[in-house]
Image (cartoon, rainbow, N blue to C red):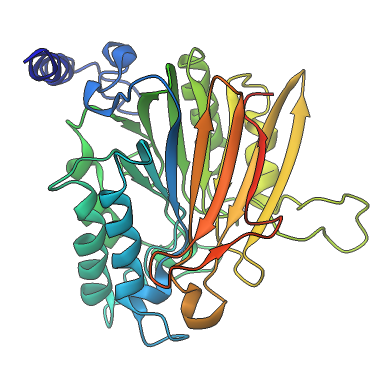
Length: 340
């Protein structure tokens, strides 16, 4: 009964708060208690990460099929309690062809059919990144449309949910969520694919402002493209290198002391990468996971990030619910410090 009353109270507060701002932040101040439906009891918890799912929806490419994505979602919903999954983050390139009229209807239909299972019959807070293939046309220095993304995963779909924070501009291409777990409060900021500097300064200044507004929350940034899995040719750095967008994101956000983690996909040949960067005494860890270029479009590989606040450890696990395989090499299964 207490949980029901608390949930009703949080929804009531959210609906009654209509503070308007430049970036349409929804109940920004009242959400300090953060969507009580998203709060997990203190202790270890996990974030499930779904890499690029484009070939599972296009299906005809590289042997991927819809059952691989379905297996990932089903595993998350069935293991929500066992793994204490507090949040799910998708890395972008949800679809292969975005708003292409020849394929948009089928691919976005499959996308909502799969990802909406995170909402019912269970309810797990989740957010999705906009990748270059979710824009149409993709990979050109002109901003593509994201009509399909915003139809199925836009502001109107998420507003009113206790974990949804707000968005940048007039759509949900860049947005943020709020959740609490392990006795800590978190903010997850999603930034759309913007490799060609279409709107970087304004968008990243918005993200900087959001992270500083919620300075008491541990910050996670998710964007489709942040880093390469291998060092750039001629570099002496033994870890993965930021790509163009990654450099811009880090340059704009490194002065936010609550930012501790960044997640991305996009680069699929090897599919894994990790780097650390320290500025003014605080460290940001960046993780790349994307398996689209492997056999059968990725074999349904995904990741689970286990947070142990008491031990100050973050453990990474890479596995496929579709094939039941688990990767145990040093790039796929490892543990690092959680906060600095």
